[in-house]
Length: 452
Image (cartoon, rainbow, N blue to C red; front, top):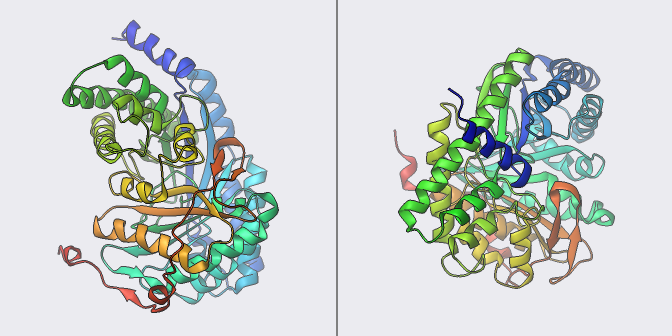
């Protein structure tokens, strides 16, 4: 039986607390598009994407009207292009990115992901060509996203790939310098990348996924922050219970939308990613949750412990609400996309070093962080290597999305607009790790990789 109080509570969450479905993402396999001819490959890819997802936007809009639930983004992810692109050269991969852009624009979606490679153990010819094409591809497209997995707990860290990605990020920043180096906001470097993540810029359609699939990403930091506020002066066990119950309600809404989208599109259901994904909107902030929990200011002492508790409670509540939880699932801490994180960084409470510590207990990594534009490639590589090592050592997904803001220095800010928000340019350590980075090779897998 429907509970009137539950219905009213959900309506209030949507109207007053920024509750929404952050994304409905359709994953599409491109294995049947493989061709020795780049022109033929691009034509088949365009047809496959536009045919498979032709009703995605209209169905999402119907669900919004039916249930009154905002669906902020409609997205598509595809098989990593380096895998299906095969022997194409750099120019061929740039053409593939432009074709992805064209298909996405024809569909009216917000982003398309999958211009990426899996290189944790080494480079295929296709992966090498694709990685070299990333700067041009990101500078010549608006909604194409790229991800490169450089490490896993099973095989260790490909430091040659880390070194290359430092250069890729630096060059992309230069090519898009007139736009705040926004091209870097579409590039993610991963460890232990999941196959079913619906969130950009890291989404792609994994090897073991069905022909097409629907993955849904929910949100709701504002809802959790208000629940914590209403809980008042309770102990931490009681507070964790409050967060769990709130995450359950948020995830159930995501499950409802996922089921409806799959039924109307005739596509299998994949997962609900129950990540708390913030926005620049006032109140829709993971940082504000931590501050409601009592840390004073995000970045201060106690922040990592509060985030660990929040992340765990969200996962426990979500798992009770859906049998198919996946993707990243937990709490995101992107600086530019979170009003509370922005404020904490601007006042000096939140530093790059503290953010790195926080990533050890949450679901993603160093995300949407602007750094000075004159930072060296080796420092960018060092930032990547540090963060990736946390994921490898802890058997979890971590990622790096840093933006060397061309022409900006520490203390400046860069505007991206929309969900990408505004990023304060954060200082980095001036010490040069180039000797370590230039050693290259593979950092071996940790001992706990031998779980078989």
